[in-house]
Length: 190
Image (cartoon, rainbow, N blue to C red; front, side):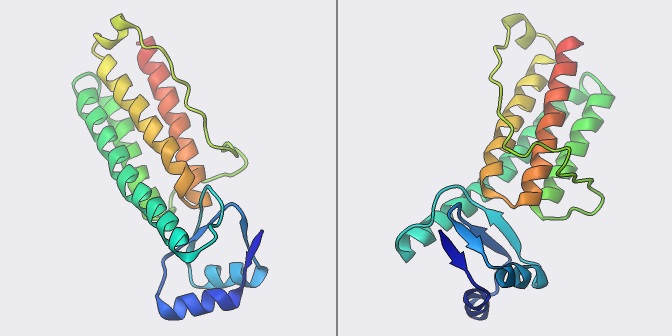
């Protein structure tokens, strides 16, 4: 277990202004360090994996985590846009629901949680497991089929994102995943 102190963060902050702090599974923040990050409004990103033994491995791990976020957020957003385009052909209500999700994803990506109701008590505490469901051929060729596929793919992107974002973002993404599942179920029933 590695403990990160306030002094260590102060040195890092003097060298480079940071917006997000990546915290590995085997790292813990001292109360002073946590307060320092909070005072400077620096988001804490809980990363999977353990703290490497040398600095070059650390830099590589953090770069991978950042790269994952920079790739998956746009992919999630694009998938939802495509689903909204297909939904517009079928139902204005579905289109509006999906467009609302696009706005939520943008807000989550920028850590803008104003107006979002994030409740850690109602959100799943662990990453939401993606249930790989067998899509029946007749469902694919119905008008809702392409929307269902795009929403499932968006759900996979959101799940992958949960491994490299802050705790608040993780909770918000879990809620998006649950909403996606509800929409997929509703589309299957129509």
